[in-house]
Length: 179
Image (cartoon, rainbow, N blue to C red; front, side):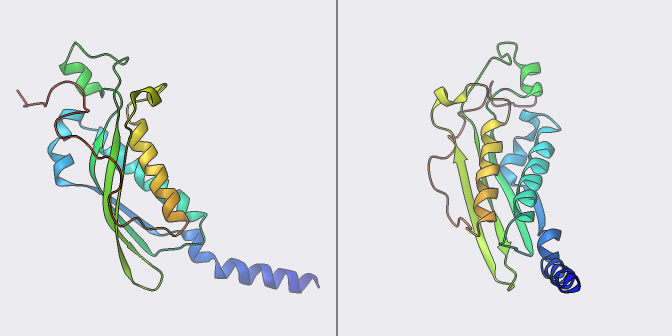
């Protein structure tokens, strides 16, 4: 009996090995956001890439939905609080400055059957009253968490829903001209 339980456990572990390995999750920055990298500072976009990658990979590692590959592009992101680079350029800002933020993500998910599914997702907060306790990228991180939750349930959002970012609005300071 003990041998049978061990054999079943080993076959279950072998069958779910791909699930434990998780999907390959690749994250890049879209051209519109990359053009604003100097506004946020040198490390901010790398931080966002790492955070999205870890959030999605972590959610998929514990999911029954096991895509083989997830390629994501952060198209846009708006901080809730000024980044250090923005604070350094504009003395009128402080860490007490607050705004609504969020992120827009596109990409594709390759299912275990090889079928490629397009992905489009966005979440931008709309009410400043919901921002109590927000850190620099709270709403962008919330967007990553919501997307990861959808993917872990096998839901692949395929179009942008809800309010999006306002051009030249929602971020701190002034559009940085590099001067």
